[in-house]
Image (cartoon, rainbow, N blue to C red):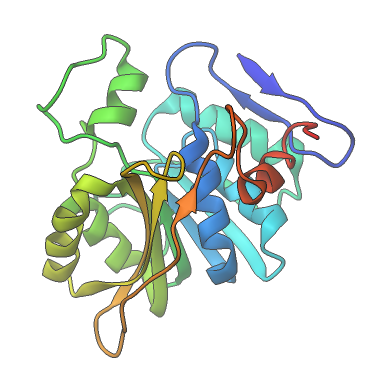
Amino acid sequence: MTAFPGSPGLLVIHQPERGYRFSIDSVLLAGFSAPHCRGRVLDLGTGCGIVLLLLSRLAPDMDSGVGVEIQPALCAFAERNFRENGPVRRLRAVRGDFRREENVAAPGTFDLVVANPPYGRAGHGRRNPHPQREAARHGIHCSLRELFEAAERYLAPAGRLALILPHGRLPEVRDGAWQVGMGIGEMRPVHARRGAAPSRVLLLLARVAGEQSRELPPLYLHEGEGKYCPEVERICRLFRGGT
């Protein structure tokens, strides 16, 4: 187990020593989602719960959050992180499969759904021998289409879906979202640094009617040698000291 301890008031994040470990993508997703975060929030595939924890600090209008996780060990980490960082009434971890019609969360009641889905498609690319890492990277538990179907089911009528994916999967996102009656409202390309091609894209989706799509200014992740840009550094300071 690895913990990110901090000074008083900072988040303490517990996660597996080996296996799934959250990446900078979770930080980017939380920062992108925060302006749209109010009311009830659902995290599909919460892992150790990092996105909900960050949103609980970044979004004062967030009332409560539910993190659904299919892997028992990761769900236990999320439960511990929610309990130790509190307040307990706001964040709750649920072990379950959000693709199934089971009681993991109440349909049609969430104002925001967030997801940091696996980067690759099942059966594509190099396999990882560690089960947690394989599930996190190659979508063996959930396809993109299944993610959209679940989000559409759990969202309130005016709710939004926020996610981060490789930029190359953007056409797949457009097609998959359209099939469940959703469209892209906002997108923000993410570049490792100025001059580099976009590697990721942050997306905000909603039900299609009346939604206008707009592209936000790009996010350049690094400034200088190995240093995150101020926008990202500000969020990282929530769970580590930083300067």
